[in-house]
Length: 86
Length: 399
Image (cartoon, rainbow over all chains, first blue to last red; front, top):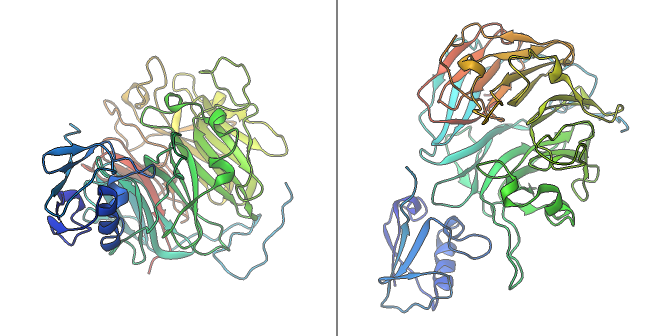
């Protein structure tokens, strides 16, 4: 499935803003991305497996609150930087 | 504490009671800021300074420090406003960087329990001179971590992180400093790699004699006027703790509640800040020791009155130096702004080199780096218009 990568994480994907990944859940999808792009997952998911506070992950148009959310091959997953700062 | 001396021919290994030779070679300042890192190259003369391009522009770099055992190696603790904390390593003095494979992180909590999360890696300390590749890291919230492979993989020190008293020592999430409670001032005794100190804001100063397997508070004599207990055993707020390499049983600290010195055989902290001018007070963040004189130290006072502005007292920045272990202090402000300079110097943002006379350097919250080739007698601005400076460390023995 397609995964949209925000600018802050493209140093991991060689500059690619869109990559393919696989898995039945977000957890599996991010593990696969981390295998290919080491360090990717920990920047957006903490050691308690929670999505970091200023990161939002959408499956199609629905925001995922945790990594147990199921995904299908035809889904589009967007990793976004939340509005923050000043 | 026994004082075994290390027998070695390695000149990088400090031997207590031996005055180290002054440095002569080129040096650089490693400047960590809220919006990236910079390297200020000062050459041998320390007269002309050249600023590097930003490194990891936009990343919040809390600490960047050279490995004295491998002088071309630098470690950096960083995060961004969105991305989680990590550690980067450079083996070519900042030209290229590699991210840690396993950055410092707390263990996953059992199902149904709330686990701790590292917000940022606040402090990095190279391990003992005889332990190549060993590094220590302190986090916010307070956690202690060690790497034995030059910063690539990190493991939590269970002796502290899981200590049954840990939560009692450090208090709750609301008990730390405004931007997060911090583990800092990880000090390794040059005589014994198993003997360590840590400072915690909040929590206090703690000591381990078994490489971190167990810890004991070391706060006797130190005030904590923000606690209801008159002489608490822990819960203090050391801002910066230093150990003198020639005299490792001599500790200094700049605390939230004053400037202190401890000689371990005396067993209690002595408030040497009482000898500071009353109109200046003895509140501040950093403290710097002379590498060849255990009696000489510098502080950079800030305004700790009323609502704690944490700026230079009366807008007039100055360092203060003592040459007799804190009995007397002398103001050092020549070259610094004489008024309307509301800067703050954070706890990692003041340091010294090893030249003769030694150089003293500090970075400010308003993005300036200042230096003195005369041990503080005269100051010069080395860089300005940088982001908010978090840390300044000296790198020497460069190629």
